[in-house]
Length: 332
Length: 252
Image (cartoon, rainbow over all chains, first blue to last red; front, side, top):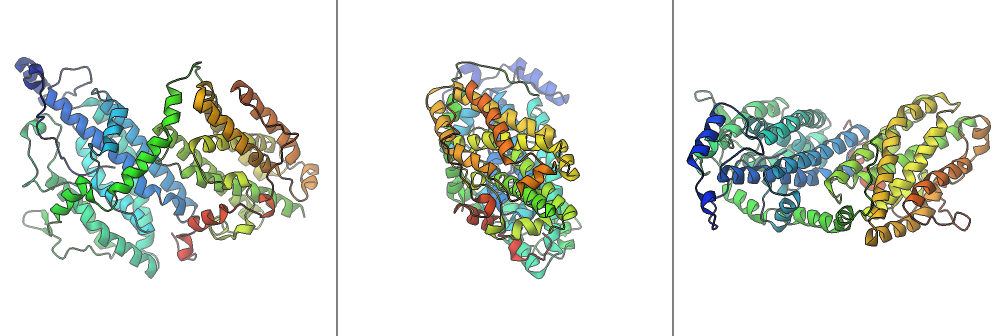
């Protein structure tokens, strides 16, 4: 799963070679024609420097989000109540790591290696979805993440899967297919609490209250403040506006939450029937930027865990590069 | 009498699977490479799935409890798992070596159960045959490639083998009334399985140039099958049941 909206790089201020600063106008025109015709761009094809750069950033952030996203839920695998939930949660988190793998592969087709992407994650240079910088405090949090965060991620990823870069679109099609199962398991687990004992209902309501703001942050800053890029829209890198995706999410999922007799901690939240848009209290965007820049409740912990895994696994990766006698193992 | 002995056999098998599955699941998100992260998660699911299937046999055939209650509410001394599976995941070398030694033991056990006179075990072992093959293939491939890399990697694998071997020999701690089970054709007994396991692991260890500790001088770490556990089991059980125990009568 992934979110955070589209936060693209500022134009690169580093010294670039002339051909990097000025795309060949004829090639650029042909490229833009292909996209306008709905063709997919493939790894070997010519592409503008800025297209490649923004795509690497987008796919890399998405991949990191999958890998870091495995951590808050992963800590509940050992505490999941009962065989059914335990098995479903391991399978779900395993899928997320698998999505990370698919996405790193897709990003590698643009020329950045998995190692350098992971290094940028660990150094803090590269971002991941803000939502994973919040703690999963109870079992009910796991059900809220599994239902609502995965639902939000699907809105985002379905939009992106219609983009222009072939390898990313194909990875996303597979990912969305699995995410739809995640949503079902999240919904099923959440439903059990919503229709359960008073203690279970209270636990769920508490989790919803805590997660609502991170969920509202999920699609990124409102359109009025997020940097627009006509070019990225034209190139089908950015597929929908943050506010449109947020509205689509609210439209589908708020009624489902209310139907269960649960409340959401925003007295202004309602659908304006005249405009068809949802209205709400603006979440704290200063907080959003503070968390993205490393100051959220769990940023340090998340990166520390990844650093531990990287340091502990170094000897294994080194050994894999150093096999004196290579041998293909039969798969069956 | 026979019913109790069969229940004891199934309980220890299931407890091993549950606890090791739980341990393997702790690698989710932490593996040395993403592919191994995914592999350990996947094998964890298989193991926990095996445990669930075995507890269901207990419930349906031998008047056992509901599997969730039995797994998530039982007291530590009523668990019959071996010490090998209780140990924390440690570093990847330990977890990989444990996976290799345990999964070969699992493979010879389920292989023998394909001839079991106890129908439900016979059917289950036939069903699981396919996935067990992948587990041992996975373990063998990794042991071989890490040993062939030499240097630190080889030394770590030898040290892990030395550490795990007495624990792994504890898988084969003799059970109560084992002779009855052997005579009734339910399974061949721990001693016979131990010998088959030594042959199976030795074949791979030789290829990997690892020195197998001498079984003649080895002291197997017994106790788990009698309910005497390492200090690592109780915290694991506490964590596993943490949510379930909030209200064991609730549906989760």
